[in-house]
Amino acid sequence: MVSDNKNILTVKDLKKHYPVKSNFLNKDKKVVKAVDGINLAIKKGETLGLVGESGCGKSTFGRTILRLIESTSGSVLYNGNNILSYNNKEVRSLRSEMQIIFQDAGASLNPRMTLGEIIRTPLEIFRLAKGTEVEERVIELLNLVGLNESYIHRFPHELSGGQKQRVGIARALAVNPKFLVCDEPVSALDVSVQSQILNLMKKLKETLNLTYLFISHDLSVVNHICDRVAVMYLGKIVEIAHRDKLFNNPSHPYTKALLSAIPIPDPTINRERIVLEGDVPNPTDPPKGCRFYNRCQYRMEKCASIYPSIDKIDDNHFVACHLYHKNG
Image (cartoon, rainbow, N blue to C red):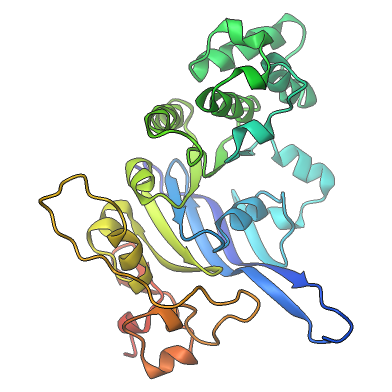
């Protein structure tokens, strides 16, 4: 659980729009609103889950707050400082505070480098160790993620998927970060290996006092590791609450549909499966009102033209839906 209520990261009206190239016959300039006005706070020491369908903007959001992708507008306050205004030198120094664990660990590791070289590189770039201290620190990091000293001379192609992800975690931890964006870090792994990596990440969080933004489409995984959960749909946050509250009392129709799709390992339990109507709207031309309008079984007339504000419906539980709007 979160022991400190201080926000390590505060996102205000963050937007990331991608212009769509058009031919000379089509003069209308369109944009894909991958992230469209997100407001979010992440508390120091917590794991905030970010869930939603593929293509909803989760990974774009995670990379934008790290400035791996430049934002269109908005602000990202890290320990009170707007990092979107940082120059290149300041962003470089920020890398030692904020790191990322990628979904495809194999693709993120240089196949021409040994594991020792991969983990050693950030240590040398940030001058965190020198001489014999470098190799000692590399071995320490390998041991920290459950790999022994013999792995230091191996290449990525000699590893299993789980071992590659452990190396990716070790590389991210090499610079002693405080905040980690975990971009679907276990989605490409077997279920048995997933549990090992998740347990490792939970242990590292407690041991090193880390803060995670955990991006995933697997709600079972999110339920296992996260303290709070934010649900994202087509570039916007539609619901955010404590994990137990969200799973036991989902409020937004989209959240209800997502949770109804989680398999239950008990054939005696009957649960109604909510099948969504229609398709996800075109991100270059989203609905004027609620973006979930064309798929929602509870839609009302005003949903088509007015986007609902995100309102507090319970203690630390917020929902963007006209069903819960204060004005009805």
